[in-house]
Length: 396
Image (tube, rainbow, N blue to C red; front, side):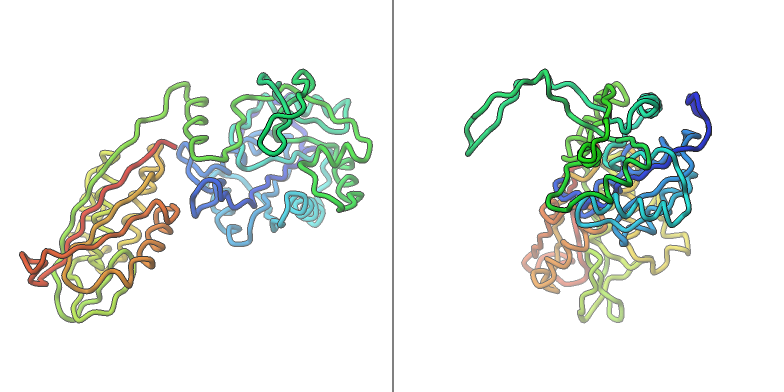
């Protein structure tokens, strides 16, 4: 790994806070694990620190449920990391990271604390913060405020504020290790700090301000992914895409019946090379069609014995991964199942939940409907089940 850093001695450590749920993103997958530019969001920060030889240790603070995922992401990025258990509050998460550093016997001179949801970390920013620490106890990047500033009380403007004295603080925030550790040890716990820089100020530390970076945005809302994409590629995000899919499978005795990844007890099941989940197949083709990537048969040919009896959720997950690699996330999916029996209504919510998990989406992005053909045609004669799907893909 290479770096433009003037000092290559490993006297720094990084704590990456990745324990948030990302609820405002409207996804079942925390934002730090969503795809961005062909890699999970957190991977961008991991690489930034790993590419700087001044960093001898990286700790990622996350939910225990995501520890294995962090290690997989780090390994795929060629980065060695430690993991720490996230806390209910940011302060507790950073404290957990400090404890993990101490347990690893790391003795950094400086510690950088960074939000995983800010993937645009540059070498220039690391250089600026490192330089500031040579004369200050801590340093933070900050952007000037260009809008008028005022306080709002009960939905109405109140006191005006002097914007010349206002800045928008970003991360990473950099500290002399002794300063950060003391700030956490001495915090009285009476209130929760907004960041570690405020904690350092509370013990009398001098916190320097370096010029922030507009591209170091924090991903909070879905539209932030498109903004990040535009900033870092110098071009507009790809346009929205729509895809449709349609599939049919025969109903036969002695087969299991899988629809939308949910096993349904019925007199007959669907026949096919895989588990014949006609709903997942239609959705898979819809996603593949939206990105111009062919159809399910090209990616999982029925002539290949490895897919005999395979669960179809992996087909849909594969298609969604291709979509994310191409710069898209799911806007919504609308699925219609066409059959006389079984009745879909009792299973609808379980189907929606399963699809949301496979697609990394929220329930309100998933629609599952059913209809009959009133006894007409092969579905009416209960010879088979058909499904049609439409998906909207939005740029990341």
